[in-house]
Length: 420
Image (tube, rainbow, N blue to C red; front, side, top):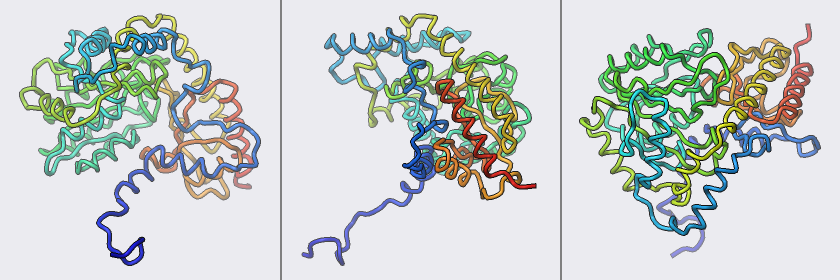
């Protein structure tokens, strides 16, 4: 038998599909941008690409949440395995938390705890997978849905969000795309990457469209209640009597703890359609062959949800509102980018890149690579979220750093502006 790699044929090797999916993920794309940073630039790097404000002191999670974690650990009650769907007290707490915004009460049996919102997405797409199935995804959107749908061999069909209409769903396109093999449509509200917040009437129309087409709605509400414009947050579950709704969410964004990895998958289905069709049973059975959140995190959930002081949330909203104002105003000073509508929620804004005003920029990716190298500013190129030659900017950082980053962005434009 030969030693080493040489001429021996081994039964394993690179999985090209995984490599491709990783390269086009948000982390993969931002990783490429970060690699282009100039190590000789002594200025601090300004992270306007990834929505994780936890590094900044002004976004620190409340002490009540930290105490809940330490109490759970030191109690020694949560060193065990948990049920695959989650500990009952934690599921009860999530049900009560979400029910505050609904016209009916959720049961703990409607709640499945997950390892962040991403695992909730994985579970739902795995459950919906069947021969010839397709799913309707928003463009722009969160590319994790595309990656997981492809992994589950679900055909992806995109409907547009309309920038001229505050990024509302193109419902005519949804109807045109759907057929007898369409399983679901996904909405993200408040919006990532657009910073939009859907109005009540628009959400109702989405539910009515889903009922007409015989599909369920997966409502990604990981940014729930992070709204600071004219439109309040309305959970899609309000319309669970019109069409079945699966809500996915987490404590990651509202409590500023994305690394704690505690999320949920919740059924809003007052007519029992999901149970009748066997979807609920499939979700539970999938979790039997999956993993679950750390038990001590689950043990802390009731206190996190119930004991966080009410003044914490307005403080975070005010910081985001001021940051969104700064971002929107400074963008207007940079001719090569245009913001179609002021962000009203989440932590992001989409801006259109006008390449005609730039002398030596090929596309949005080239723009972000050169910006990183010349100004140490990280921005997400729009192609990664479905819109080529757009940019996704996060404003969830401290105000002085945001001002600095946008000033550098303006200087970058001035350096590369086309000479008239």
